[in-house]
Picture 1 (cartoon, helix red, strand yellow):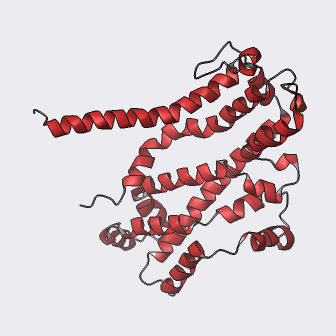
Picture 2 (cartoon, rainbow, N blue to C red; picture 1 turned 90 degrees about the horizontal axis):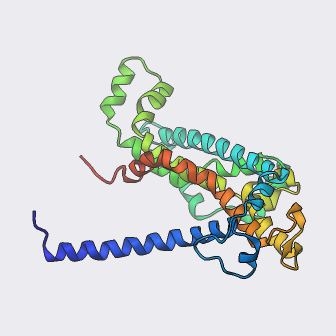
Picture 3 (cartoon, rainbow, N blue to C red; picture 1 turned 135 degrees about the vertical axis):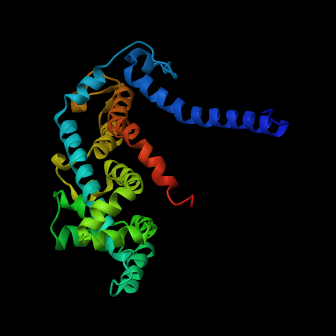
Length: 293
């Protein structure tokens, strides 16, 4: 089929637009990676562009061998896995309950949740609750508990559950299935793409957690990877930069830019590596409900 002039023009414009967007995303990443493995002379003379100059992995070796980094990696993985699993469980169960027509007080509970989307307790009351009353300073629960409930995700999952044919659920009831069996064996497989997409957002948010560490953690053993990166980029750079050499954290003779860019790559690498495995669910989840029939 011969394409019209308008279609050809659109494809050309679309190709240039996509190429431009891809370049905006890839070029900074290539620059960061190039600096992270370039030699110190090229970095100090600012000769590194999107391709590395020389080859030097000393920063990577120093970071990977650092006890604080390894502890931060453990903390980030632990918090991400627990928050993602528990948050999906809580979100799914609340959504299932709110999807029931016979749920007593459903309207009140729904409005109660929605109000929290627009009016939160505020930073100071939240800090006082976590640190003074619950006494969760330097405790993993300070990272986990506030991240368990997201009202927007509850609304999305509830909409997907309500879209499941009622005849399917009624058939399960007739066969003697209980509520938990209906939820986890009948409904959950149907809404799995949506749950997987939401899980990716939750995991990404947990992986990028650093502000809670700033508020509730006074020990380095409680740092997450993002807070470790913040310390490398800001605190350690400002306090240890002398004569172009970062001397704190045991990074002798390693330019600070080299150390910082290597830290950025290492912190981002795990979550980026996981994305291809959940991409198919992510795309399905985003498109779920957009096409009817």
